[in-house]
Image (tube, rainbow, N blue to C red; front, side):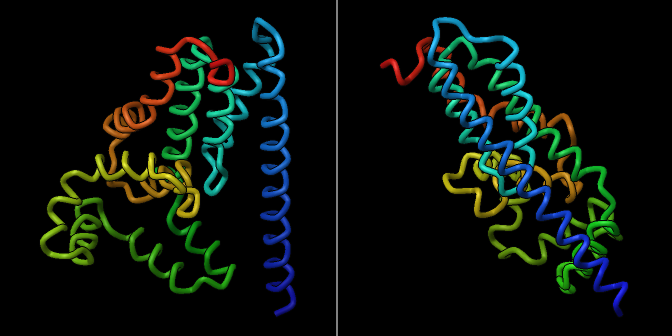
Length: 216
């Protein structure tokens, strides 16, 4: 009993440490974005670090990395809009591929160690199903009239969820894409196209304006 308790406490400590590290990284990036508007030209080295940090943060569930992207766009304007756009795609695809390749048994054990037995059992059951069987299981849980449409247009639904205001409460873009990968219901190429179209409007608008929003 004691070793199991110690293992549980250790995992909680690791999770809290990672959460603090992500918070510190997020705060650092948000602070550094303020320096981008202080000069006529962007500092290339800082910009690269910011975009890498942004891609990492937006891939993490429940981390509002999109706020960093919006800050970069507002301060940097059209000159960095394509890079923020690519960083957003890279971060969300990273979350997707993480979910695609993570073993359901590993997630199930992790949930069980946290005491989430029902969630653990659900993940374990899903891990035994093929993608077509998962579609059927999902269809059975949805309203009969809506199920065919929701499943057929699931990529459209995914794009809407990524752009949903306040989606941080359901995991943010990173959490949504992580779950999409874990479901095995989204192939890589359509997923890439879905993300590319879903996140395009704001960077495209800023790029068309050409100037930082704070200068308008």
